Image 1 (tube, one colour):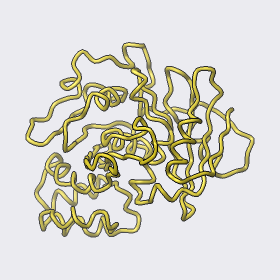
Image 2 (tube, helix red, strand yellow; image 1 turned 30 degrees about the horizontal axis):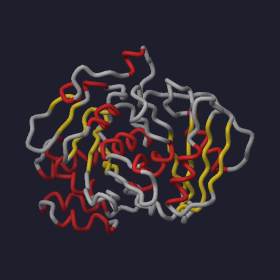
Image 3 (cartoon, one colour; image 1 turned 60 degrees about the vertical axis):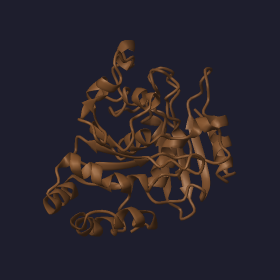
Image 4 (cartoon, helix red, strand yellow; image 1 turned 45 degrees about the vertical axis):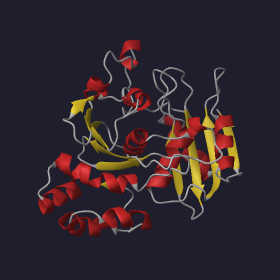
Length: 294
């Protein structure tokens, strides 16, 4: 079990600890609990889906990186597959505050990067802020997404975001978590560049068509990729670097141990991810940052 879970795990009910232990101690546990494992946990504890998600929130919050706020937020996203995906807020010393990641963004993006097709619900230990509500409105489940909060009855995103403005108001047909392939190509045999290209091909940028992806090589040689997730309100858009950092963090890796990074993006006269990507990675101690426009 990753050491970051120790304190939270010790506070769980005994039955849940016993059922969770083989899952958390498995070498391939990367903050995802599969649908079959969920059923095992429910049978062992007598919990329903909602109760289990709430019980797991402390483990999700243990993934938080909050050196600035010291405020640790956890989120658990449930996919239509039945899988559960952990998420937590992430802050980076030395980088602009705008580069931080909210727990809901983390859980949603984690599920997306793992191949989940849509979300059924998200459980959070604090009320989602307006930024996150707008971010989640980009999802293909939209305002029907169920939001579960401690001490409250379940409600939809539409309840928390009345009179919502989103992609449907702009006649966008392909929504966040829908399948996308932009058919971009790159004449390179560099493994990291090709990984970033694949991420760019699956990025979500229906407003700008500025597709982009980032690939990070960790100190142990593992590669973590992130895709751009654009939002109808623009500001809640999640850059591809942040998506890659999410995957790296929830996989139990230290985001301060990035050996090399590659950003691949389409040429755009409107904007580029390059400056923010380079500056944030430099703040994290990574200076081997490469940029390819196609």
